Image (cartoon, rainbow, N blue to C red; front, side, top):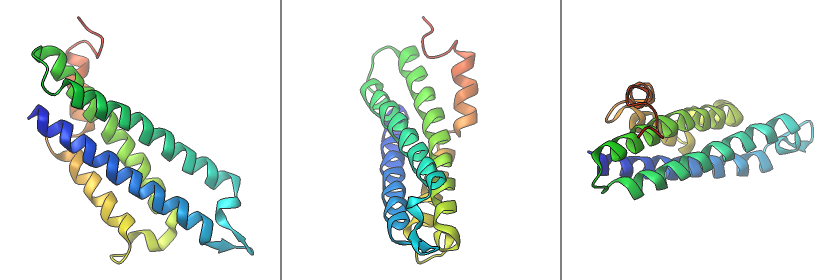
Length: 146
């Protein structure tokens, strides 16, 4: 199960990175008021928030991968709980912002962002969602518990 969680975390990071890339590309080409919407500072801030969330999720996915075959079941379990909780949170933030920044086209069946968002939403529920893993991590005393 722990190896499966680590693999799902890596898949989610890839899907989030794809959503971010598609969103940034869209912000560069979609025009409103005669200028690309990517020139609007508030949209740039949303894109940066997405980037930061992805990088935090990437770090946790790498941590989960490193810990997936640890002999210490307690440490391994805490790592998986922490990774799943962080990646679930990040996936929701990235997906919701990607959909919002794409406007109506983001949820159409013809556009990939909606498919990626559905996949990361499904990943969040497999082996327990972010809330489940956050509660489990707290019950074990947190990530740094001895």
